[in-house]
Length: 294
Ligand SMILES: O=C(O)CCC(=O)C(=O)O
Ligand SMILES: [Fe+2]
Image 1 (cartoon, protein in one colour):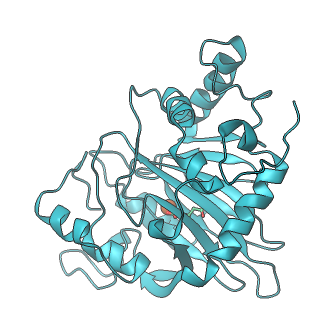
Image 2 (image 1 turned 135 degrees about the vertical axis):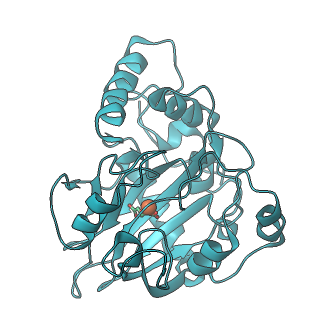
């Protein structure tokens, strides 16, 4: 199969994904079952699966062009935060504690409302075939695009000198496509299942925040790879991009197991510098799937 550039601005899954290697549109095929089985193993064992070269090379270039074109809409912010995105001391906990350990995050996000419907990035994010494939990998019956109008579809931009320190995600799962890698630094690292729905794992987390490397996994991601990641329970970071490196660009597709989940006002403001009326409405009536700190 050839992957020619489509003439119109309408992208289909076949333009974007290597369907020969990964027939995500053919869920009854043997090959589909094999790909899903491998991903399930990774997700069961370490909460992470990498589908190498899922996005075809010309589409990777297109995704990067779409990011570059919208780079002026990136909301950059630098803050010193704990893994729960809090920035001030919590007196309910001792000073030397995961909750009271604050590290630098200095990256930027291109927000959800920057993407035009029908652009390659948006088509991939909203593909029903991709959502079913991801749900199968995650062994859940349904998967919904994160309903947050800013945080659902984003690109994470790390310019030279920036890092995205250790943290947990609010959404249940994240799907990342590395679009442009840094020449130096910008590596994704994670600690599989360092906490669970009923165990905060504060001591293990503190150890990593203080530089411990026990159970820290480093991924060797390449542009075009798709990573499926359970970021609720696995502490993770993107290491600092060297000052003389090219930037790192990653498209981030956020999905939730339940429909209608919207991010918190505080975190949305931190990440995007603003909120939309949807965020304020959701603050009153929160749809959450667990009761972890955040
Ligand atoms: O850029 C990445 O690979 C992941 C960044 C991240 O952890 C996040 O956006 O929550
Ligand atoms: Fe994250």
